[in-house]
Image 1 (cartoon, rainbow, N blue to C red):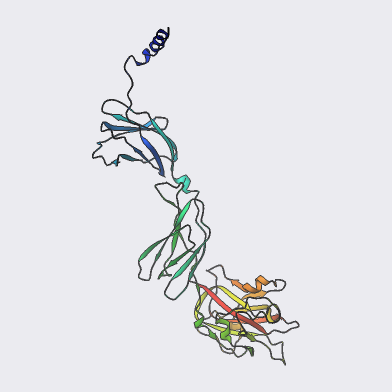
Image 2: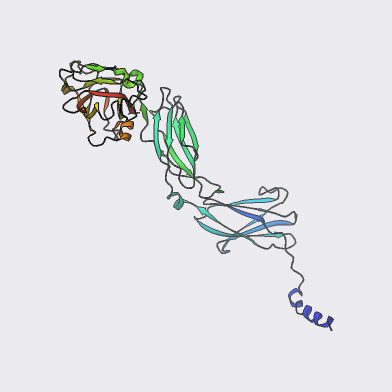
Length: 398
């Protein structure tokens, strides 16, 4: 009773195997796809079946395909039973691949499938450069330090190329996790270029890049050992300190009371202006930078915190001629570069940072060796025009 119903069920399957049982060869193992620039790399394992001699890769809904025939023992496509093949000249798009193996006995494998993407010009058009915060020459040996902002999404680093003092082309790389790069012995008379490198996905076989751009400005902090006083006949009398205190590297940054401002600078300020008998004589002094330089930035650090001889309104002049200005201090030889008015801006942060004067356009930035400072009003009240600073620093374009 049990046996005959079972035979009836088996008979129902005979129509499916009347031509013999289907035999499959080994499928592609661990099929993996790697994106690239108009190309995609496929890798997959082959079982240790010496009869497998061919793979067929289909994509684009099986409209496109390639046949890979190989000798398992000598094929350059196979290493350690893993086949690697790179599909090239692919339009920028997403792809679904199907891989099927065939053996010499006429058997084929169950297809293995995977998706991936080829990138190209559309992707490159979306890339942008990591921000360059500064490029400063830091010594006389031509070393330039570059400071970078936050890295961008999917970027992997930055490539910089420059010419060294021996006229060799140098290429350097800075990964995303770093923010500083030192160009040793840079010839700053030659351009410096950089671009940002990207990988759209972690396992991408190609690195994409933005176009190379030139560093617009390399800045040098002028060497204070070259600075000196250039005393003109109409410079004001010195009240306290010496002018060299302005570039001894000590600056006051604490906005306090009861002489608490004498922090890093101690008592080493420079105070000049009218005498007690004539306080309305403007505080004027003249500085020789030692070299003629195209100025980018001047920083004035104060000494008195918004009181006494701390300047409220003052002017900066430059000598734009050749050689040295006349010692008589004739103001007709001097060009006003900036006028600074701190009225209403007296904050702790401002005091600590000081006044920073920028000449952002390199083409029109003043090229000077001699500068004069004239105080129009200080914080002591009345018309007193004595002027006191703890430090002056200069940066120039290269």
